[in-house]
Each structure stands twice: as C-alpha cells, then as structure tokens.
Image 1: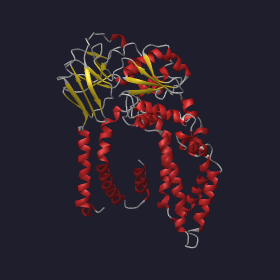
Image 2: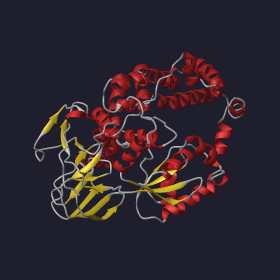
Image 3: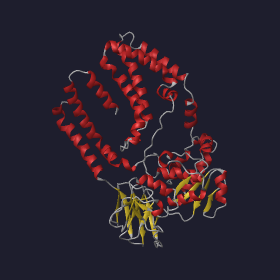
Image 4: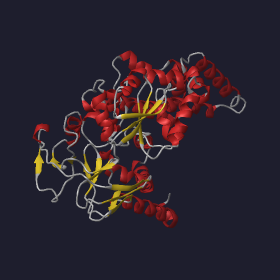
Amino acid sequence: IFSFISTFFYFLFKKDFKKNFKYSFKLYVLTFLFSSFWLIPMLFKVSYTVPHIWFPPNSVAEIRDMLMPKPLILFYILSLIATLIILKKDKEKMVFVFVAFFSMFLFLISPWFNSIGVPGFDHLQLIKFLPMIYISLIINISIPFSYLKNNFRLILPTIVLILCILWVENHVTYIDYWISWNYNGYEDKPLGYEYYNVNNFLSKLPYGRVAYEYDPIKYEKTLGSSRATETIPIFSGKPITEGCHFQSSFNGPYIYNSHCEYSIGCSCLFGYLTKGCPFFDFDKGTEHLKLFGVRYFFASSEKVKLILRERNDYKLLYGPGEFEIWELNDSKIIEVPAYEPINVKIDNWREFSYKWFESEKTNIFLVWNGDERFNRVFINPNIEDIPSIYLDNKCDIKNIVIENEKISFDTDCINKPHIIKITYFPNWKVKGADKIYMVSPAFMLVYPKQNHIELYYGYTFSDILGIFLTFTGIIIVIFFRKRLNL
C-alpha cells in the first residue's frame, strides 16, 4: 500500500507521465510476481480467517492522541520546518509528506473499509497506518540535512538527534516500566517458578490439548502478562486451544467466547462478531471444552478450583496450588458423533455458526460444504429446524497421531462420520476417504473408506499458481532484465 502511495506521488508531480507509468507498471508487475507465492494463496483463502477490526476512536481528543502522541510533538514541529525548506528547494522530495497525509486519510476511513463486505478489507485495522505516519515524519525531517554544507552536515543532525532523544525521554509514559516488567522474564515474577513447574509436569503427561482459565489480573501481577499462559506449548510441548495469531483460525471466536464460561476473566475479543459474549457458566464451558477435545484444564482462580473440586467429570492431576491441572473425562480429539451431521446451506454460515455454538444442539454437527453424500439439504434453517438423527457411535478409534502437518488414526467404523477437532483449512488432504468436509464450528469431517485414515497438509491450486508466478518473475529478471530496462 505504502509503496504504491509513494509511486502515485511521482505520477502527480514529476514530468513525463507516460515514461514514469511504463517504468512503474513493469516494476509492480515484477513485484506482484515475486510476492505471488504468498499473496495469491492469501487472497484465495482469506475467507477462512477471522476479521479483527480495530474500533475507531470515539472523540477528537482520542484521534489527536493516536496521530500526535506527546513523544512525537517535537517531530511534527521539526517535520513542518523541514517541509517549508523542501518546498523552497525541491518539491519532488515532498513524497514523505504525501505518504504521511495519505496514511492519515486511510487511518480515518479504514472503519468504512471494514464494513463494506469486501473479503480482506475487514482485516484492515486503522492502527496499522500509524507506524507509516510516524516513519514518514521522521524521514522527512532528515531530508533538509542533505542541503547543508559539509561543515554543518555532522553538527546540526547531531544536535537535532540529541534534542529528539531528550524530548522523547521526558515525555514517555509507561514504556520504561513496561519494558522492564515484560523483559525481566518469568524468573523475576512471583509465580514464575511455579509456572515452570506446572509446565514441566504437563510435559510428562500423554498427548492432549490444554485449555487454560483466563485469569488476567493474576497472570499480569504474578507472571508478567495477562497472556502469559499462551506460552504453555513452548514450555510443555502440549497444544492449547488458542493460536499465536487471533485471526489465523476461524475457531477463534468460539474459543475466546468459551473463556467467559469457564474463567473469571472474559476478554470478549470477538464480541463484535458474535454480538456479545456469554456469562460465567461452568457447565456450558465444560460442554465446549469437550467439543474442542480438551483433555487438560489449567486452573488458576480460587473460584474455579472450588467448582472443579465439586465435580466428578474432572480429575485433579497437579495440585493443590496456585496453578492446578485437571483432566477432563470423556473428551476426545477425534470421535464419531452421537447424531448424524446435517448438511446446511445458508447465506451467512458464520453468523449461523455462532447461534449454533450458543444453542443446546452442539452435539449435532452442521456441514457447511456438503455434497451428494447427504440425502437432504437444509436451506436457511433456524436452529430449531435442525433434526436429531441418532447414530450408533460405539466405535474403536485408536493409534491417533497428531503432528504439525499430519494426522492419522485407525477406526473400525467404515463409512461413519468422524469429527477431527482440528480447524478446517483447504490445504488439508485425506487418504482413506473421499474428501474432507468443513463441519461446525470449523472442524474437519471424514467418512472413512478403510480402517486407516491419514490427513496431511498439502498444496492447493492457489499455492501452485502462486509458486509458478514467483518462479516466472525470477526467470524474467534473470534472462530479460536488460530488455525490460530495469
């Protein structure tokens, strides 16, 4: 976006538009080809991710504080002086002023982009334009230094640099404390070693997905961050329900809404998508933990620990202590459901999936991309319209192996639906079944044709096309660079 903005400036203010356009066109075609190996798959698959909209500021004061925070006020003043000098010397070097103003414009209108319904535009967070505004201002300040005579080219920039450092140092707010608190490590925190011990215990347990209670105040005070428990996979080697990037998996909204049901904290991270978040309800939370195949539960608050001690569907494995590990009975990562999955065709499957998740019918899975295998299609149904078709699910599923890009298991239930509680993505392929279906909330469904099933992460058409275009760009540069006059 910003490289295009810069080029657009030269179209407007430099002579010989035709020549500039021709050169830029060739340059951008090559840029597109070089980036196609990731850009093409991203464009094809962006609908399988979750939008994360940054809410717009509520007041003029908030806009001012975001665009012109106190540590940068001096930079704005210096950039204004630099702009006046550049206007007299060389208007073509106004490019960074142009980029800064254009970025401010995009910052202000990005909430509109979020709402127009174009795939990918709902990921365009207004906050992402702020760094380019700041960087453009700083670079713009440096341009007039090139006009100085040799005697001043070192002295004046050094003076300006010292002034900027002193200004920023005297106008920062919480950054010094934040850096110290965050980078001292777990070892320096009150419960750092207890956190290490509980993860060490987890590492010795059999494979199983971990869900943790969201206890932000305690984690912030005793571990250094409200998100400290997201490091469980690093220290224990066990997978957790959360991902390292909120938008990377469409299961994100269900997972973070579930936090509110089994935790004393509730981030309501995706509440704008699900139209609110649930209240604390440990029974409902347990249902959703089972839905996600969670085997181990990381408890932190006294409230949740007391509830767990009163239940017979959890078993204490580690504790009592500040942090406890409980095992959830009868929770499976791969299973044959108790009811037949129902094929649904609906205008907005995402919105319907949120309603399904909060309903009492989460034991009836909904297929979002069904085909002729399913005898009946329910078109734009209500939750109440979903039938309960009993299925004999007394099956022996064993030898489950889950790796980063491979899942395998053995089953004695041929042609019966098997729910794999891993997020669906088009790159997943299957051996031993005809295809992989996307099933609610966003899991994978297969109907085995043989006893041994293997799913693996492969290439799609968009991946192959992107790689082909990138290699095409490389070949063009190697063999035709002189002819292109680049």
